[in-house]
Image (cartoon, rainbow, N blue to C red; front, side, top):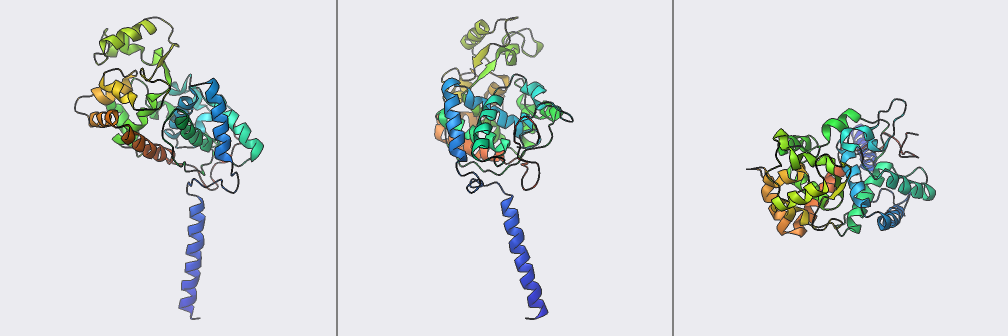
Length: 327
């Protein structure tokens, strides 16, 4: 063998090995096939049990997944409690009162009993989100897996990067584009508000003093406004819950978008998608309201895209034994 052919052969072998190594670090639905082959069944079994006692389980989990990925990427940082060197994202304004943490812990316990130290907490969020959507009648998809858990949290990032319920569309669009998400992703992912609840304090300003005007938000349907004002009176209990989707609050469908067309979106961030004059989001909302299949297809694509925001893979991060704290 000539020296040149020897060098080419070595380069080829190195390239093959490098390619295999890199492939291992890419998210893949089959990531746990050898190390924890029952992972999907275990997560599904726990979610089904929890869903029977808490119809909001799926909505809680998908909110955690979204809020996690929009900070430092999908790394499970939202699950960490305060500790030495860690300022918890749970205390950031968008996460105050968020539920679902106990659900993650319950799933993690079941997985640790079956395959200890294998499945990351952030992959639990991704898997449980998909299963929660299915259990509510929504679409299914193959969830890419192989993320690892962060060793840090970012409370300030949570305060700045996660859209608040009172954001305008002009603020939300750059928040999404900075994460590599476009207008279709913004509208499709907002469609997760087709199930779940929101507290009065997240939309109360729309009912009585919108933008400091001393009047209600003019984009709210008048009859819907009266219903919300009775549920959430001025000066009343801000912790009272209202359905995000007034029509089918516990089902994953496209009625959320029909509500927006009828000016019956609960949060400002919801109604902005349809009521912002001249916005391209209006046609997307209309399309989804008329075509549930299209909404489901786009939602699946956007969820996979969301789950691919800056994940930790390979030897980065760790696989937490307890999702609330680093090992």
